[in-house]
Picture 1 (spheres, rainbow, N blue to C red):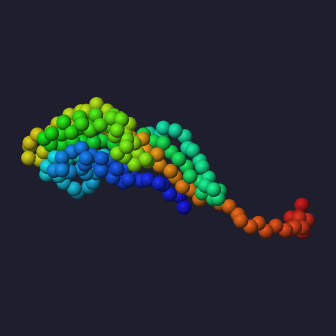
Picture 2 (spheres, rainbow, N blue to C red):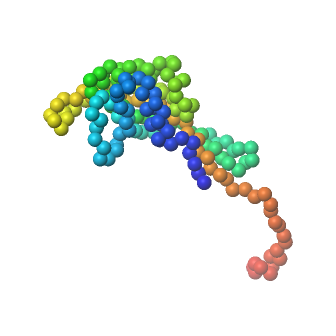
Picture 3 (cartoon, rainbow, N blue to C red):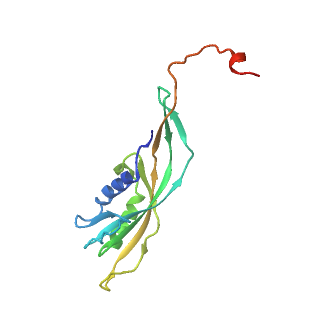
Length: 171
């Protein structure tokens, strides 16, 4: 059976936990692209996956038994962070700054580390009530290092014997 060490949900969980240390306790941090879910009522951040770019080729390592092949990968994981509501520009700027800070990688698990964030962009948003809602977009980049585990075939016992070829395989 083939398995992966960390899933996309693990990435969302790690990034969300970090964002919750930045924004005030009244803010919500939610995953984007949920169907039939309304926007939170107060200030919030929406996290939406935006792509995976390969950074290196595979590194294959057999375990000590030679039966399990671990395949290490390196990706650049792109995630769009949208900050909504009053104060969204300030918290988007804080997040962008911290993505490049030397101490921030220590706040993440080993399988994901922040790289940088693009320039901030304000995107106007008019609500259903025809009110303006402040929205700032930050595309963030992380290094993601999953390991794929793939069992390999092996044999512990080999039974061998002689087969009379001229009888079983007529030429």
